[in-house]
Length: 104
Ligand SMILES: [Ca+2]
Ligand SMILES: [Ca+2]
Image (cartoon, rainbow, N blue to C red; front, side):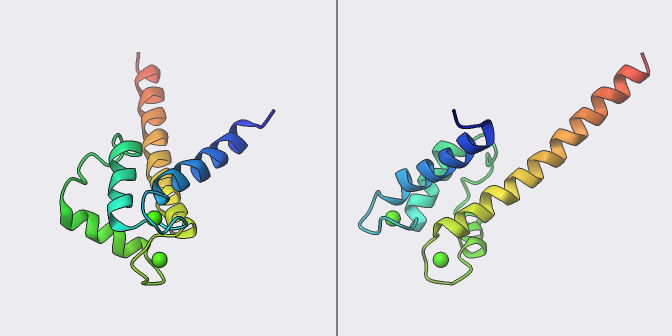
């Protein structure tokens, strides 16, 4: 049985390839594929990313080698960045909850 973390890593790979194989370049995400992935898989985290300028910025930030495509390594940096942001929210929520409890 794979562990929770192993399953998460497997999902990351599966999701990346599901979207990356929508055009003839199977190993990388084009801008369109990235948008599709964000719309379907990150809609909870990236609510405000309907704005094309924001998408361009994300794409540019991710595409560190400048080939106009997002490869797996570049995609992982998006996931890591979001996870860090998310963990900070999580800590704040936990902190707020603890705070509330303490004052009851
Ligand atoms: Ca592709
Ligand atoms: Ca690239």
